[in-house]
Image (tube, rainbow, N blue to C red; front, side, top):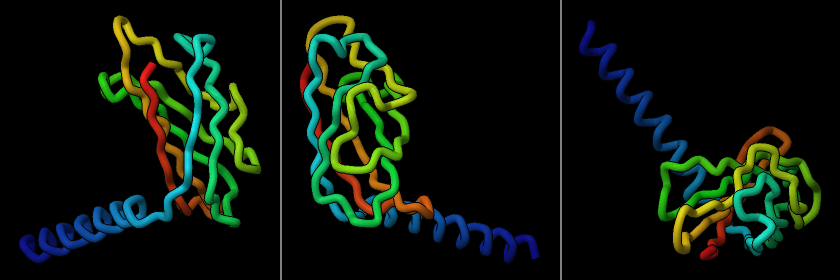
Amino acid sequence: MKSLSLLVSSAVTASVLLACSETTSNLPEMGVSFQLEERHRCSTISPAITLSNLPAETNSFQVKLTDLDVRSYNHGGGATNIQGNVIPEGALNSYKGPCPPNGTHTYRFSVKAISVEGKPLASGQAQQEF
């Protein structure tokens, strides 16, 4: 009986993992663009993010900033229910701007469009050296 329970548990885990990977990898692609400027350095003020190819059912966005040179540092991002194709400057509520200790780093914004039910509809990303 234990081995049957373990087998069922493993199958359920595999199904959930497969569903999660399909949720993000098979999403339609949105266009994402942004411009980090000196005023964003070491700041909690996020840059404006312009989006294109948004699904009509979009209710909100989930945004994350990643330093591709120091992936372990959490720059955060946030969720916003801004309507339209521009997330305004300063709109992200848990954002820590780029603050490289030395040299230039590459930063990537990842954005997901979310439905009113909370399901991902589309995703996109863009990166910039700063």
